[in-house]
Length: 139
Ligand code: ATP
Ligand code: MG
Image 1: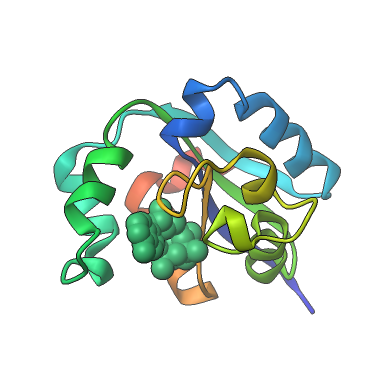
Image 2 (image 1 turned 135 degrees about the vertical axis):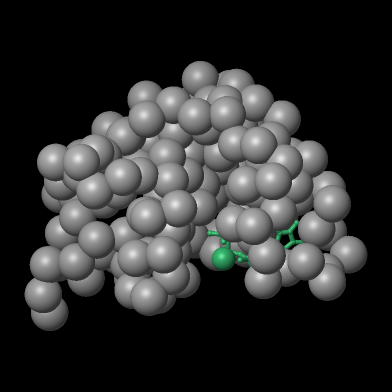
């Protein structure tokens, strides 16, 4: 296993409910290095592009409305096996099906309002990091 980067979003529901600090504490406790972090209001155009793979799904317009409903924290996280590890720490997409101790179990409200995003694979991670951050912001 080698050191790699993944991309994370602390989603609007978690920011609104003041759980962002707890999620960042968990990120640190999991030995991720926070390479970049910023508060951001995702635009409709950005959300439609970022979640473009889901454009044909019935939940797409609702997902875009949710992701643009309030500020988020976008972050780049680094550690060994970062992509898979962050997905494991987040838990299943549906908080009702997520394992105990995962972020989505603890902080998610529904299959849509599920507190956090994590890249699905290293290629997606590279694309998503570039989508939100310039090279100079990665420290
Ligand atoms: P993410 O890409 O945000 O890390 P994921 O990879 O676990 O989540 P995806 O299948 O990529 O899940 O879905 C993207 C997002 O769309 C989910 O995180 C959730 O917010 C929303 N979503 C997924 N499935 C549904 C659904 N059936 N109904 C409503 N919203 C959904
Ligand atoms: Mg996904």
